[in-house]
Length: 161
Image (cartoon, one colour):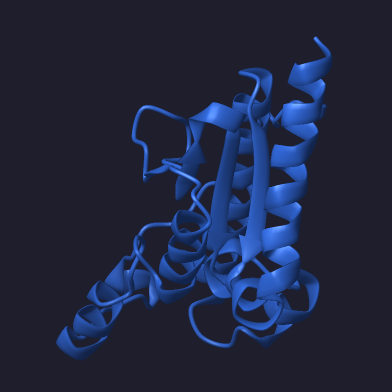
């Protein structure tokens, strides 16, 4: 298991003298971006509930405030947004045109934090599954199969003990 890096990426603050400024309109738009209960999260949670899996959501006592925690199976599930968590980052990074000095370190720090959280949770005995929002939207069945495979493996392992 890879230990998380000691060097943390520093995200520059928004400063007008550096060319960063926020209009009221931009501020209003950014405030509407959801961090919890996104459509893909709700779709996944509903499916899990419908098949009888009980969970907790956004558990603050665990690193990273996981989107879904299924304690019975030591399983944590995150549903990550493509922009904020760096999907296809090498390609997308080159396409950021405005405020690159802010957005590139911001997203790279999010990616770094995701690795740190994964490490912390795994070292506490949790299995961590991360799905991109697009996977939930376009490949929902395979996401559900990954979850069910973990549960099946968990039950078979515990049965053998």
